[in-house]
Amino acid sequence: MKTHVKLMTEGKPVRLIVTFAFPLMIGNIFQQMYSVADSMIVGKTLGVAALAALGASTWPNWIFLGVVMGLSQGVSITLAHSFGRGDEGRLRRGFGNSIVLCAVFAFFLLLGGEFLAPDMLRFLGTPEELIPQALVYLRISYAGIPVIAAYNLLASTLRALGDSRTPLYSMITASVINIALDLLFVCIFRWGIGGAAWATIIAQFFSAVFCLPAILRIRQLHISSNDLTPDFPLLKSVAILSAPMMLQNFFIVVGGMVVQSVVNTFSVTFIAGFTAGAKMHGVLEIATSSFGFAMTTYVAQNLGAGRLDRIHEGVRSAFWAAIATACVIAAVMLLTGRTILSGFVSGTPEEVKATVDVAYRYLAIMCVCLPVLYLLYIFRSSTQGLGNTFLPMVSAFAELIMRVASALVLARVIGEDGLFIAEVAAWGGAVAVLVFSYFHTIRKIERDRRDRRDRGRFSVSK
Image (tube, rainbow, N blue to C red):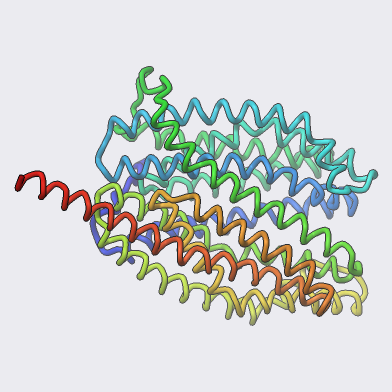
């Protein structure tokens, strides 16, 4: 099978960005599919308690996954810069050092997760009757951290070099395997909630295996033992990029935990409706992360090639493409959302109607403001592609503050709707910081390059 490496420093920006993002969107659809199937199989087969235990393990699991994803995103930016610059030596060293770095991180995250799992569940106020099942799920999930780290490193490396198709094919493979193993382990073998965890890890293993041949076919990534030797200046640059992205993901997790704690103070009907509406959040975000990966790769490669003019053009094109995509998705979800949400709940007609009303109100507010979320991803990813991950981290902190403050204050002032508005307020707070971050960063890069040219001309004339 051919590896679809793509240099994004030549060609029409909007075509490059959209064709890069589209396979990732399809991959996200499959990812959402197996995530929903996971919950449905556990809930239908094992009952409400098992489903609740699965939900209780979500945030503790994401704390560690956020570290893995932040590290792989930092690696991706570093490799994209080297690829765009045409520096194959640095590209190979970067890839080799990243393998070692990810292996070390995965080992310590595995140990930390296994040790801290019980305390995290109790810290979050997990009901005692749910802890045994949630603990089983977490321990198995943490044991699979090296597999998840391997997949994220390989997929991020391929995206950095312009290949978004192989990660798509690997995600489709993982989705099919995950659903099949869920049915086998949970429904037939009766392994309980642990069976769902094993299904996810095995599926992730096969997705990593799927990406590996594509990596091996890329000549520029044929590393030697020297490329595995620590290159401390290079590792420092990876750390400078990755650490803020890890913190960014951590802030998002903290905000989610605080909002959930406020949600839990309302009625059971509201909690169920909020949960159903939150499930639709992933559907609304199908294209956001895809545009984000596309912009990080596009901007980073063009920065490496010194093509700032193409960066401006690409961001403008992505801006309008994101707005159009958000409007289409919002319109479709507003028209079909109530029908889809009805599939998440069961009970008496009155209970179903009350729950769906809550969920659809939440969905409608998010749909109306969806373009804000898409702009958040465009400007955050573009700024990260420029090599500035600190200001996007600041934007995540602003997002955390807005989300928590809105949830705590608005929920008391205007009631349930305050929690829905909190999500949109968080997007707005982040976008305000990110628009400034992007223009501040690129103007600084332009100014620094002008200064270097001026100094060069002065030295020549002298």
